[in-house]
Amino acid sequence: MTKKIYLDHNSTSPLSSGVLEAMLPYLNEEYGNASSITQMGQRTRKAVEDARKTLAHFIGAEDPDEIVFTSCATESNNMAIKGTLDAYHSKGRRIVSSSIEHASVRNILYHLAEKGQIDHVVTPVQQDGLINLEAFEESLTPDTILVSMMAVNNETGVIQPIQEIAKMCKEKEVLIHSDAVQAAGKICIDVKEWGVDLLSLSAHKFGGPKGVGLLYIRKGTQLESLLHGGRHEKNRRAGTENVAGIVGMAKAAEIAQKRISNNTHVKELRDFLEEKVTSQISHTFVNGHQEKRISNTSNICFDYTDSSSLLMALDLKGVSCSNGSACATGSVEASHVLLAMGLPQHQAHAALRLSLGPSTTGEEISMTIEALKNCVQRIRDTHPLWRELVNK
Image (cartoon, rainbow, N blue to C red; front, side, top):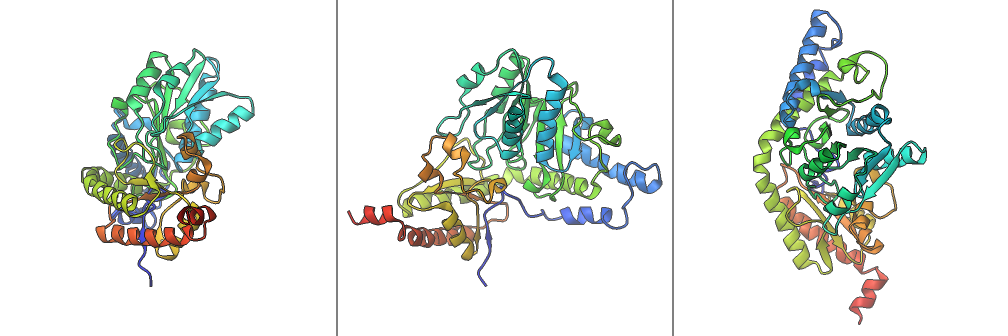
C-alpha cells in the first residue's frame, strides 16, 4: 500500500492528540442539555463556560462573554456581516472587503449586493498578495459600516496587516471583522492588539472537530442575531450548544497555542520543499509574499501543467494536497486569489497548495518532492506548449 502523505492541513486538520478523549464524556454519560437547571445540565453548562474562558484567552479577548459559539466559521462570517448590516443599516450600507476573501465571506457579500441590500466595494491586493493599503484607505467613505478582511489567506498563507487596517477603520469609525480561520494555531491572535471588533474561527482548522466555530464580538458592538429561537448564547445565537464540539475546540486551542513556538520546524520543512521544487523542477515559482506568510503554506505554480491533473496524479501516489480552497472543490475556474494577484489564467490554473501540519516529517517532504518531479514531467509530456518549448 502506498504511504499516505497529508499536505492539506489548510483544508482540514486531523484531531490533535487528546481532543477526542476530552470530547468523549459529552458524547456518552454527560449528555445533559447545557440550558437545563438539573445537575446534569449544570455540569455540561460548566464545561461550555470553561471552554469559553479557554478560547477567550486563546484569542486575547478580555471577557469570555465576548465569545459566541457557532457551528462553523461560515456561520460566524454570516452572523458578523448580516448582523452588522441589520444593526447599522441606518448609518449606511457600504461594506468593504478584499479581492482575495474566502468564499464564506465573498459569496455572502455578492448575495447581499445582488439583492440591493449593500454597496459592496472590493479593494485590490498587490502581486505579493498583501492588501493595497492606499486603495483600501480611499474606500472608507462616511457611509461605510463594515470592513471584512481575512487575517491570513487560505490559499497562499499571506498574512495581512490587520492591526494597521483596523487602525484605519477606527479613524473612520468603521467596524472591522476578520476571518482568522487560517491564523489559528499558526500565529498568535490578539483581538485587543489587532483592534478588531469581530473575528471568526473554525475548530477543524487547528486540530479540533468539525461542526463547531466561534465569533468574537467586542463588548459594545451591536449585532443582530442570525438565528432566532431559544435564548442560547445570551440571546445572540439560538440553538442547543454542541457541548462535545465546544469542549473539543477548547482542548485543540490549548494544544495549538503550545505548538506555535514549534512552527519553526514546520517552516524549515516548507522552505526545504520550496527550494528543492523550484531548483529541481523548471518553470516553477512560489506565489505570495516570501516573508509575510504563515509557516506551513506553500502555493506553487507548475507552468505547462493543469492543477487538477497534477492533484489527481499526486493523490494516486499517496500525496494529498489541494489546488485552492476546499470550499471551491469541483470548480473548474482558476483561483480568484491568484487572479487577483495578477497571475494569468494559465498560471492560476497550474498552481497547487501544499499545507503542512505539526506531524509532517522530513521523509514525507522528500517523498513529495520526488512525486512532484515524476508527476509534473508526465503531465508536461502531454502538454502541447511544453512539447513545442522543448523541441525548439
